[in-house]
Image (cartoon, rainbow, N blue to C red; front, side):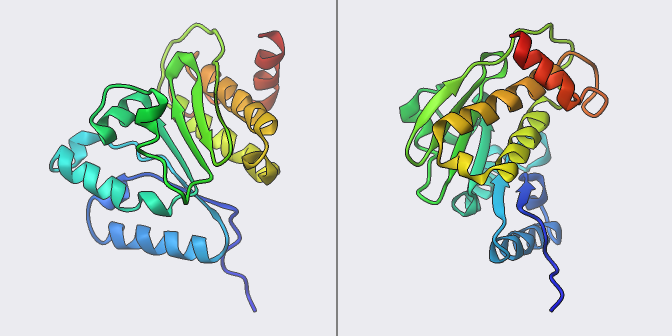
Amino acid sequence: MLQLFMATVFHYGSISLIAEPCRSAHLRAMEIAKEAGALLSYDPNPREALWSSREEARTKILSIWDQADIVKVSESEVEFLTGIDSVEDDVVMKLWRPTFKLLLVTLGGKGCKYYARDFRGVVPSYKIQQVDTTGAGDAFVGALLRKIVQDPSSLQNQEKLEEAIKFANACGAITTTKKGAIPSLPTEIEVLQLMENA
């Protein structure tokens, strides 16, 4: 039988939930990915101006919340989704679901908070000279997912997960040192050099 789905991770945002037929296609793609055993990774990235209202955005974003394995939100998105201007653990845990394997809160230049089933913590960022933050979150998520695909046990091992997040933080940090989302993406050598010199 021909295997039609080979991906290990299906990563998505919330923009495709705004209107049909994109919304139905998005939901079906999630179903197919889940059935194939892929990790579902969700970075809502709301882009409020594209929605008819904040309430519609919040409702639709949360409508698929429980289906994700990994969710990444920023500080401002925690406030948007909870209505509380804080990233203290008790507030962030309002976003936690028993179905999650990992919940991440990116803190810009301050690093990243992470919440797994059996442990949680904070991984600081790297000190760099910021030029443009465009694409930093995408670089972070892409790097972290790569590390998780390479070693899925990192979702159950705090030390391995923190190493993966350090790598992802370095990718995000380097991305902010140049203009543009794609041209600023670092090579692995650049990332390892930053980590070594920190």
